[in-house]
Length: 121
Image 1: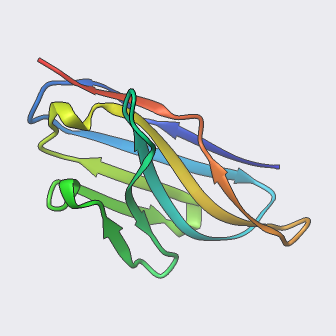
Image 2: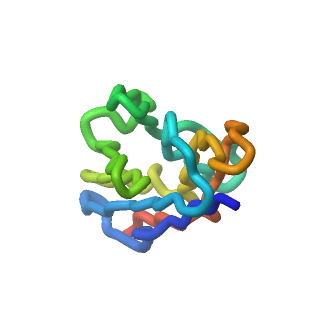
């Protein structure tokens, strides 16, 4: 079994910062792309940022220059540093990772349980 556990969400004022973390654990052979998605009420889930195992990153246009994605391959963890937060960043943020199982050697997409980020004064 593979599990993704997120942490770091919460309530922050506009202009503030938060750092999200997501740790993968279980029967892991390897992890390729890891990323963060978000879903606001009444909207579809959208990609915020992702990062390959080689460190190549991409960002959704509205977060470029404000958010930074990084990963610690040794600890199977991905981070999302969010600065200059805006009310429109309010959403549930989900971690995603493409993981090859060490037992089956199948590669599947796994999701975290989601963490709420609320930007409000």
